[in-house]
Image: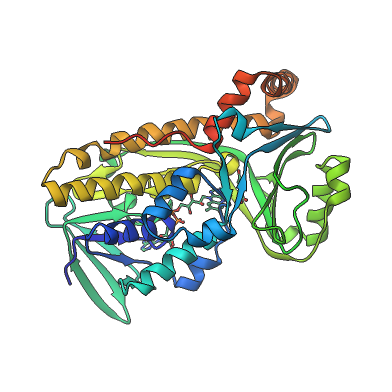
Length: 393
Ligand code: FAS
Ligand code: PHB
């Protein structure tokens, strides 16, 4: 087989890249090691920046996100039993975010790809990358007991943190940066109405909590839990009881509980692999970087990466120029590191770190007090939360 671009991974990064390339007239094949249902079963992000909405529009898959997504113009911070609204819209000259689950983004992208008759090979495993240090790379994969090979011009590694793409790069060509947090997020999805029409980020003596949603009838909640916690030790009842202990009286009053549709614990880490290009191989999304989900940046960084990559590949094929491809890694990493900083800062501000002692606790309280009482500080939070502008080549 031959194509112009082989995309490894059919998560949001891979699927969006495939759609953007198709719309630019660039042939591509996606290889995914899981089944489509398995990919759709993963419950992850919930907040889309305008940059992501614009890229979904460019890919021709934003109709449902506009019709069913919830525009959000503010978030609330809860600490010391009081809620403080951060007016995202007012502080950023009218910007907003859209609450629309990653699962639905993935579903929309899968449907568009199938409707165009584009090739996605599911349950393709193992996948191996070859000769990406040349202009004639190949990708091999196993399917139905046979080994297949695809010749291509470029490989896009969109296969996430545990994928094969970054793992195929010689260790001395990579510089890895990592910070692992001493806690995880226990998340529950339930068909119950949200406690509030905006997200509530809570910093309480018992730890962090987040009240989010997927619609007016489906809620997503998270609790900070110790790294050694196991999801099987958390019954629905124990989850709801702990959440109540981390909410203010009004939210407690409004809380509607119900059976969990999904319950899982996600570890929190900050991670960046530099550079993001190795000859004909380009890393995008979680394959190249991970952020703690506090700032709702993971999915939005992935879409920005593939926005840059699809534009650079379009310039290459249309103008025969390598200039944009040569700048891909630099441009992505400038945005990545700003999102890493914001996600680390917001995580450090909203979670409990007993190891930081009493002084650390007082500093955190002072920062929260300053944040909600300073227009400059709130504006900084707001402009990062809605997403920084996308640079161009
Ligand atoms: P993904 O990991 O989504 O997709 C990679 C795809 O590649 C997967 O389908 C995988 O099966 C496939 N793959 C892996 N290895 C392969 C191989 N060898 N061959 C072929 N295919 C292979 N972000 C937020 O903003 N908010 C959140 O609340 C949030 N919660 C998260 C919870 C968890 C448990 C995790 C892991 C991440 C969470 N994220 C969150 C971040 C998440 O949304 C990612 O940023 C987003 O999925 C990134 O998309 P991709 O880069 O496409 O990677
Ligand atoms: C979610 O709804 O899953 C979500 C929202 C905001 C975050 C993280 C996760 O910061």
